[in-house]
Length: 171
Image (tube, rainbow, N blue to C red; front, side, top):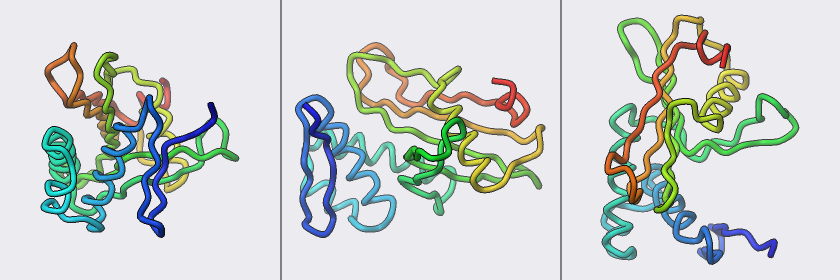
């Protein structure tokens, strides 16, 4: 069907779909905790322990970069500016005097491993945020990250693709 999982904050309702509902719920909780709309304790009290643990691990990964990450950021897509994409977490870290763009995407799937290196979705997100907010010099570092805590095929939940702005431009 055409039903989509979504959250209605004014009504405090989360509508789930059979296929992607649990992933949507994990994203909603992560966004609420990272934006201060829910506490870690509230997450642990209201969620199943497995999901709460995975969401808290993701929150820690995002917060290790910067406590001022932007969460669920909608940006015009670089290849189709009339459309928008939603980036799970965008942060800037500091390396000496240089900014490092860090994009982190939560994947909650179990059966399909999602890698960071060469990930077109992550590259589009990074390019889109740079075009929307201002570019970086070609030598600037970019870290594109996938956090997939339930992957049955890869025990390492955090996968990172490190490249420069120039390399992203060429990709």
